[in-house]
Length: 46
Length: 133
Image: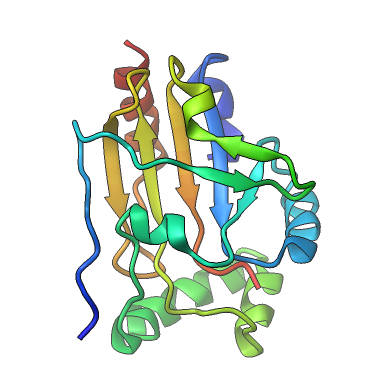
């Protein structure tokens, strides 16, 4: 049985995001501290 | 969401995360005219960190999903439905929508339980207004 994933909720620190965009540039959540951020996690697109 | 981005205010950052191969992301972003970055997470480590798991077959491919895809087809989303005929990605991976406040803490953490389970745009806009306050 797979371990349950953490499910952080409102008030919890958002986990780090450090991912490349389509051109390879890194996008880090920490770089946007001080701004509201909307993160949309897509299911599959193809 | 894309059509109401101006309601989020100029201070808000938006990013879409996908586990799709980078080569396919560009065509997707251009097709949908997305004005924000599309980030790729092929290993899905960030999905897991955000608590986004895979859904059961019954939930992902049940009648509610079929109804949703029928709606998409009627609305002209043929590419979406066409892709389902020959999926090349994990169709059981679930998505989610998160709003993070200026302090780095969640204001909204929404994890979809199936393909038709998303917060409304009104919910997202309200959460962003809270985050921006």
